[in-house]
Amino acid sequence: MCKTCWTITALLLVAILGMAYKFIIQGSVEQASDGRLSLQLETTERDLVLGEMRAFLVAVQQINEGIVQDDMKKVADAARKVGRAAQEAVPGSLMGKLPLEFKKLGFDTHTKFDSLALDAEQFGDKEQTLGALVELMQNCIACHAGYRIDVVSD
Ligand code: HEC
Image (cartoon, rainbow, N blue to C red):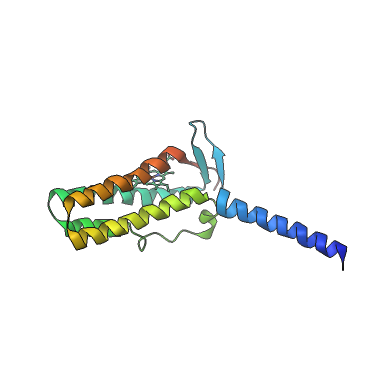
C-alpha cells in the first residue's frame, strides 16, 4: 500500500474536518471589548441580519397590539411574517460566518413565532399567547447578550 497516499489522505481529512469545524461550528468571530462575541461581517451581511431584526421588533409590537385589540388574526399574521417560511434566504457565505449556537438560536426563534401563530389561531387564548411571547423573547435577550456585529471588510 502506498504510504504517501495514506499520509496525503490523512492530511486532507484533517484539513476538511478543520474547515468543517470553522464553517459549521465556529463561524467568523472575535472576542469583543464588551465581552460578547463579535460576528465579523461585511456591510451587506450586517444589513441583512439587522433587517431581519427590525422585522422581529415589528412582529413583537404587532403581536402585543393584536392582544390588546383582541384581534388574534393580527397576532397570527404578525408572527407568521417572521416564521420559518419568511426566513430570508441566507447566502452560504454568511451561513459560514455564523457560529452554530447563533444559527440554532435564530432558527429556534423563527420556529417559536410559527408555533405562536398556530396556537393564536387555534386557541385564541390571549394569556397563553402572551406567555409564549414572554418565553420567545428570552431568545432575543440571550442572543443579544452573547453576540454583536462588526463590519470587517467589503
Ligand atoms: C440569533 C441571534 C439573535 C436573536 C435570536 C435575536 N437577535 Fe436581534 N440582534 C442580534 C445581533 C447580533 C444584533 C446586532 C447587535 C449589535 O451589533 O450590537 C441584533 C440587533 C437587533 C436590533 C437592532 C436592529 C438595527 O437595525 O440596528 C433589533 C431591533 C433586534 N435585534 C431585535 C430583536 C428581537 C425583537 C428579537 C427577538 C424576537 C431578536 N432581535 C432576536 C442577534 C439576534
